[in-house]
Image (cartoon, rainbow, N blue to C red; front, side):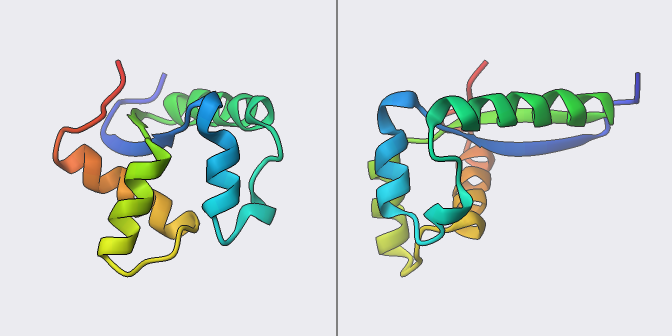
Length: 98
């Protein structure tokens, strides 16, 4: 097992908000069409990165709150901004899942 020396904030979505994420995202064509598809892919990536020594910090994303944050910062909702929002929450110790 690799040594844990890096942290990564990872946006973690809720099944009941998946359609909102697709509706609001400007790059929804790059997202899995279903929550289950996303979840399987995300869990696979978490396992892979864990083996590489990356400590994953799952950040619970409320889509409506993210939308408000994006509006306040004049940002569109895309992959870059979703990651940026997750990092913002992690740095402020908000919405961290155990």
